[in-house]
Length: 210
Picture 1 (tube, rainbow, N blue to C red):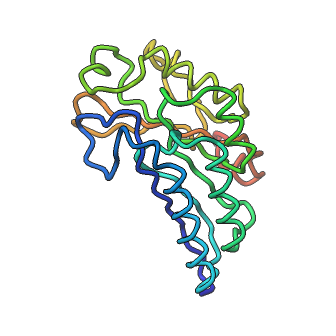
Picture 2 (cartoon, rainbow, N blue to C red):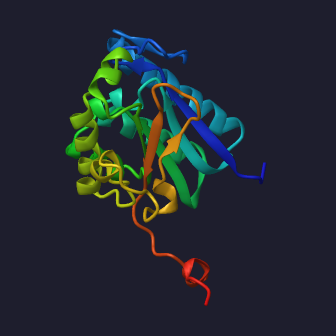
């Protein structure tokens, strides 16, 4: 098969399952992470042996992928690299809960080749976060964005400015928060990617016309 594919890897583990969540995810079962990782690697190897696809995107979703210790992430990433043909510049995304990451962990993801980070923030209001049974506070969410920048992810929106009512207009396209209309409380998912130099064509396209 010559046409490149997008590879989705599901990580079903959560520290606590939020009351609104209807995804295939489980809390209190992190002791199964080693066995799940081994089974996942085996399935990746089987698919790679039967059809070594070219892969243009890799997306780790959940669940809470950031519940995985870095060593288990490394094992899965190595299996993907060995079993499939990753295209040069392939997009590699990991979903993360702000309550499960710190600067060292995020730097570890970057070192493994992750070049896009999806930080799920449902609200910057602590009362709403508690009602949603989220495991983090608004301050912890803001700190996660700061840690992402410090770790090396550069196209991050600024939640401090956003919380103060600032505009998102000057943010990079990959960093624009997405809000689901009519959702109460609002759902905001922010994506962060390492800084990439814009092409001359992209710069020209953004230049105001006289």
